[in-house]
Image (cartoon, rainbow, N blue to C red; front, side, top):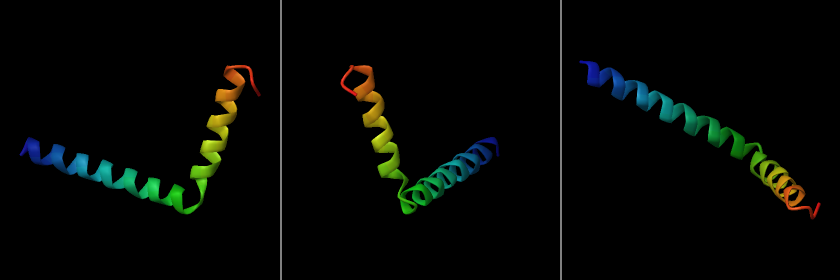
Length: 48
């Protein structure tokens, strides 16, 4: 019975993360995050 509870909890967490990821992608946040990552990387090596 304990294994079933763990399986259900893991499944719920995985489904919730997929829903949140798809929501962010649908809002176009992938490009925003990528732009911020590039800016931070360029500042770290002194080019920005």
